[in-house]
Length: 338
Image (cartoon, rainbow, N blue to C red; front, side, top):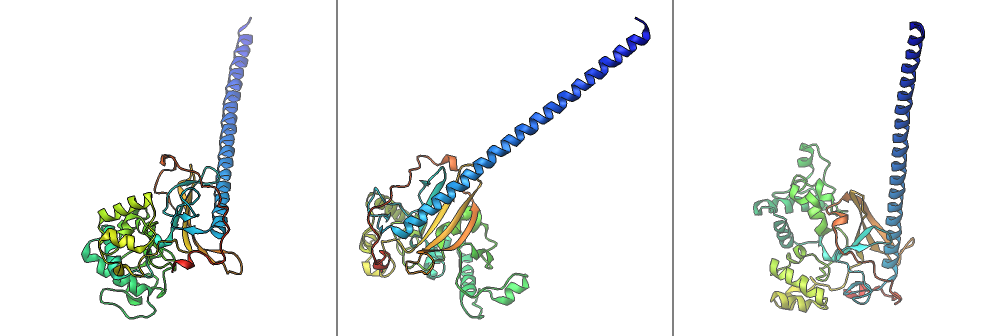
């Protein structure tokens, strides 16, 4: 074999190796693209199923709210067939998680007294010297005039900071106080949605001791943190059936809680839905409208909120109880509570 033939064979060998290398690289690239496409397809399918689960559970909750009698236990008549309205976790129709919170178990920012609001802000670690100004700016934001309170703020104060003026009307959502001077810059209120989790802007009145979290119970006159926790323990054994029981636990005359306590849920419920794999939750407020022209309920607001817990870290989530077989009365039960 002469040198020219050997050189040609060497060139062919090198070329072949280069072709094999290119083919290998191309095959690896295509395989990675295929695997990536399969992963995206699986993720898309999973996300689609999650959205279907959320929609199915939402439909189930709306159906039950429109057709199920409420009692001291919640949405249902007894301890075994009721959906409790104290924001506890339930497994939805699929793999999603749903929580229902009676708005009567929250502090109504549109109707709360200054004293109770002062106590709530204290429970949220707001310094005492700051609370008076916050109450004044809230009242200026929601009243229907342009008269500024001593520590409040009206349109000129907002304009000086290039902020939208106060609406001078009722708050629409518990997230709206983020627009109020003295509230918007206080991170303690908004980290993990601390304030929105304890407040409502619905038309509910009074307080339901069967559905309120302990910080809300602790805003009642004479209720310490320890009494509030004891009330939670008591209602887990047997729900409160009258305001007199609450007064007895506090140690005050029942008349001091007149018109402040109603032991039945209101006609307005906050619903929170989440699912494994989603970093956010859906939250919306449902108000019952049995005489409405379009539907027996109305969605007041709809938010995508931060997830403040790990879906896969919530242990022993029970399923939603079976639907009640008791027909809804002609007079909604929440009306008979007033």
